[in-house]
Length: 170
Image (tube, rainbow, N blue to C red; front, side, top):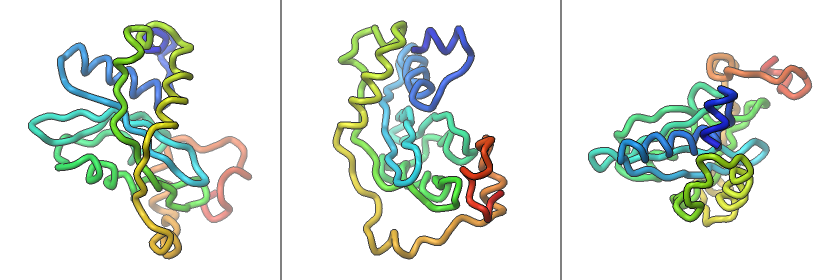
């Protein structure tokens, strides 16, 4: 919950997106969550907002390129595609495949602000909403691996176990 984030000063991407949504709500800026779905990787949640009829996003990640997007994108899909080249796993595979419809927190009343267990309900609900495919199997089959230089510049937090990182990226 946002309250827990203030207490512990830590959060994952979903908690950060919920926290950003709270801040936007306080400032009367329209926002919602979007789930980015991956293969052979973790999903990622964004807090998407709209200013001057353009989309932007705030997110927390262990990858440099998966955080902030300024509100310059004409559509939600265009915004989501801006994450594609930065969304790869520890083995260098590009993994972003789908994105969700906008997910509003209104149905949870104000419980999501203070109750920690609500985050698990939000996580399950956002995973079960409609998602749209970004690429087809033909495109997927020709995707290269990320360069070692890009990998080392963008990965902010690496697993302690070296076996969880592809040998070309250790």
